[in-house]
Image (cartoon, rainbow, N blue to C red; front, side, top):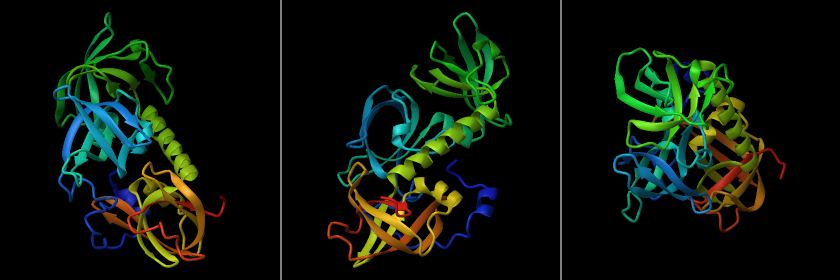
Length: 327
């Protein structure tokens, strides 16, 4: 999840006070929702181009198509963990948090979360009210697990040949396993409006939820290991470079602790698509600092390069950082 629990705080290093905000032209990682104006919309992902980081979604409210530009540090919440825009499937039901760009357009994607992630984070589920066996339709109520609040009543969830039913972390269940009163975690797409949709994945127990979360963590950490930790260059002073890594790196950094003082790393500038460009530059970590900003873990790293930084590496440049020295 992208929220803090008592246990995670106990395991993490003691956070330092947050530094002053950088200039407004660079929205820093972690400044999501709480300290910037935003607009929220629900919809189905209609398209996404990773080369330009632009896409469209069909709004749930009125069916219109809206365009977005994914910010470099967009927070992607997926399967109970952190992810990447590439993790979402076309047609998937998502929540979009949009902020205003320098052109006055409210189309910069600052945070995106699938609805499965949302119900897990909010301790909710789809409770089965009744089952239309002939048409293979579930009539459900989305509510708190403890029954304290109803979120969406009268939901209609269709199933089809592509729907998978998960039990004990495996997709071996069947539609006939479902029964009234069961709490379900459902990944959906399509449908009409807010309350009608089609199920892709029906998770019937906590073991299946844990399987989805574990697989997401593995996939994202493999991606970070391959592509490097993404971030911004905060300052460049000769051979000293200070970078802030995006929130999507925080879980792996807290778990594996790969960024320690005096440890070797490789640094590269990244292009608009966030992919590394040019050579990987050897560097040594001078210091690393973890702090919490608006309920998000932020990692700040000061690097010492073997020679002055190349001229194209400037403050606000996108970067990639790899622990170790393997090029």
